[in-house]
Length: 130
Image (cartoon, rainbow, N blue to C red; front, top):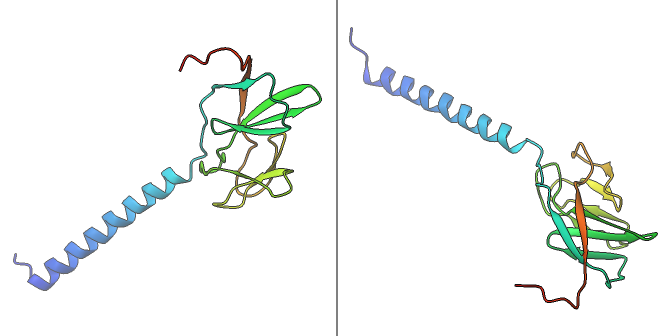
């Protein structure tokens, strides 16, 4: 049984198209997975009294004697969040997810709030050891 050149080329192109479609679909599925931020400790100077501070890719929020830190990575796809101009929330520049300063999801494609990180208050007068 012989196959014409035209039929062989057509079948080859179909095979390449199916393979490329599958590859693109796999990439899409991988990219759509929510981002997990590893648990870590944010070292915050005890004498820093700013209400909002960014330290090591984390937002540190001081309110009512509490110090909390949240990852600045959007849980949707990992884009870096930016503080709103009025400093009342955070917005993802990639897909528009919004979060309040307690890390709660307000809107957008993200399905959960921000990852809260552990905080260690440090004495800023002590040598850093770096």
